[in-house]
Length: 450
Length: 91
Image (cartoon, rainbow over all chains, first blue to last red; front, side):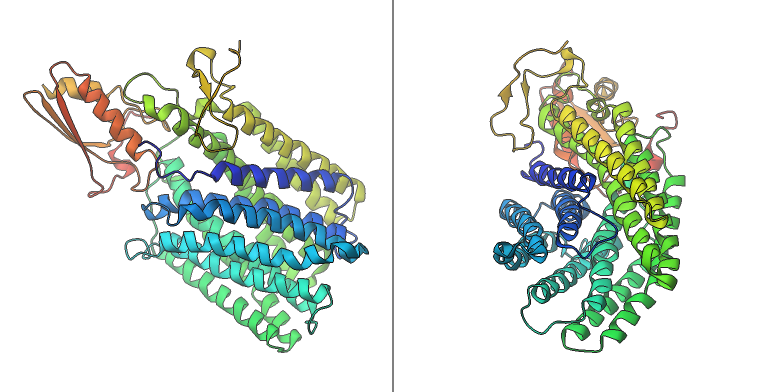
């Protein structure tokens, strides 16, 4: 059966993540993500809607879909995908609401304590699927496979540090030094979990979309082993801190790793540049064109990490903002447009290949629409970075508006792709796939578009 | 005889690049004995989600060739596909 290795719930993962992104952008636009008050409950709620609800969920959903490609093996335990999604999305909402307990809404405290349990369950279920799929002698020699597994190790650290901070903020147990825990939480989440997973996936994904030779030589091996050392040190510092060790030493170690992380980003970008030069596909689609902007934001985040390391404060905040919003989100939004088109093509047109003409995958999307909304997103990122550095509330509000418009545009384009709205009427089938749910019973098309 | 099959495979497109499978260098071998056709092919990467789609597409194209009554399509990944297999004027 065509498409039998596709995960049934991928589009629901993506839909849930997009909903969280739009909610986060809307709340940010309404002033609920104020750079002057990150420690407020409402601000933490919006930040976690964005990072956990959007970036983590979209990465988990993408891994469930992509690890079979990476390992050339069907997904292990595919039945866990839906319970993992339910646990992660409800856990994210519980955490966002629970943060409001810090602003005096004490009735929400039980949700705050329940959230880490649900999120941990969701993470664990995905980790089981991904590890069981990738852990095979035929795939473990690939640095990109090991990089995804390393990202999962960092995810464990992210959850441990986050869960411990929730307990401390809720007033339960001995309170660790939160100012020492936070750098570890950020580095394990951004560079460890999201960053390494993105690097591992893009090695394969970029080679496929660029028609470039899969390299994976000494440089990739060196990047992996350096990353493995950094994650090991971060996890060791976290365990030291959790065991009651000196907060000062843990913080010093985390901050000392920042220049190494910047170097790691530089090495990764060097390898991707080599891949780009070796490509056989001259004309690129928006997903790859705008991935270049994402990579430029990675370079900017790495550059900002150095003054962030030296002086902290707004430099560090801006580096985190550029990494999350510029690098990881631009990359994800650009590839999401392509991947949803690809999955839709397989759902609708795969059975026709060889029997009748079929459209190319890229005809399901609009280059113009995709580029317009991704340009808005990138402009919002730049405006946000500048406003953080310049401490400009008006600039920050403008950035939130641009980001919201960009995210809305991507959402609109994803719906158009699912509805095959960019195809000429003659090429559209009589039945359209469901917007997000698995294709069990395609619904009849109400009318023919003109 | 295999020219007819080659021509039929020129009509099976890789939906990602828009190039046919011959131009993409994904067809390794074509054999025909009387009404039976055999094709050995690959995909650009072993875990490609289009693997089964392309195999079925090639099979359907083979069976549409006049005189072909049975077809067998075998997928192999050794030797692996590389971009060097793409025809020079494909892009």
